[in-house]
Image (cartoon, rainbow, N blue to C red; front, side):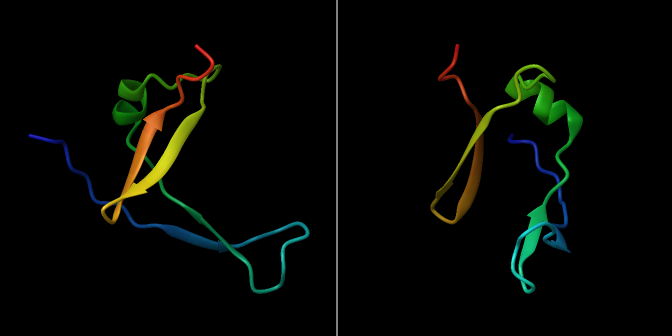
Length: 64
C-alpha cells in the first residue's frame, strides 16, 4: 500500500520585491519520504508536476 500522511499547507506573505498581496506556499515533507527520493543536502533538485489533480514530486535525475 502507498504510504499516506496528512499535512497542512503553510501560507505566508511573500517578501522582497513581491507585490503587496503576494503569498508563498510551503509544505513540510516527512524526512523518510525525502530520503527515499534520494534527496541529499548536496543534491536537492526535484521535479514537480500535476497529473489528474495530484501533485507529483520526483527526484531530478537530469544531472546524473
